Amino acid sequence: MLDDVQIDFYLNYWIWNVRYNEERRSRTFIHDTFAFTILREKIAKNLPPKPKVLDFKKKWPLIFKKQKADLFEKEFWVFPIHLKEIRHWTLVIVHNPGAAIRKYKHTFGKDCRILLMDSLTNHPKYREYFAIEHPNIMETIKNYLQLLAASYGYSVLKNRIKSVICSDITQQENCVDCGIHLLVNVEYFTYFNTLWTACATKDLHEMRHDVDIEFNLKTGKTRKDFQELFTYLKTNPIINI
Image (cartoon, rainbow, N blue to C red; front, side, top):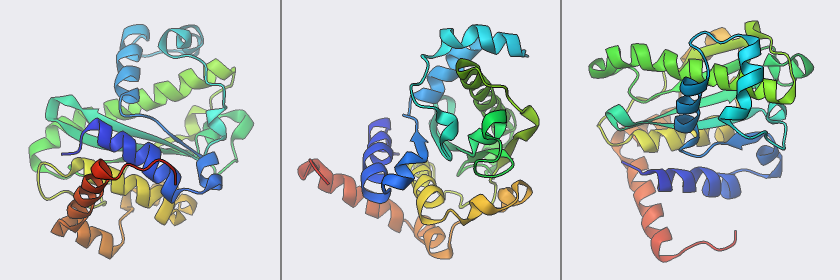
């Protein structure tokens, strides 16, 4: 199982510098591996169970500092999420957050889409756990979106915020590859294949990997590739790319 240091490195250094070009970097915001956990704790502490608009306006300074850049101008927000209870990594990609804001509602499409990609979604052992946890994750992201909007003084169009669980993505074959699936999902769906961004929201639950990527994940080739990369980087640190 990959740890938070490896995941942060791959997302915020390797993908950011090696995969993305300047245009892609300008349209993407990648959170670190602790961001979601901290957000959830602070939201639970400071917001009521069913917050109103005034709650978001009053409470956002207690939850985070105002961002200098306007994150609603981005096309993608990436949230790597660690679920401590089951020692598992999952992923949320928010596509087109600006659609939820009156000012930006047609930036990259009609809807703001919160996509949850979990490599154990269909595992019978975790079905009851995820029936509760996945909606809770979505609700935290929605609350964060409304808090962030309040920090900028924006009005939120709640009917444009859609949640999608991508249940057709490749599922892991063991109990240790969740971090690898997370990294592959970020790399694939924000870089190698972004055709899905033009799809209707109602069809996004059917998002899948290409056959070769699914094959490599299921046969262990992807795990081996990551092991070789991280082993190489231990003895050959990258200074400049």
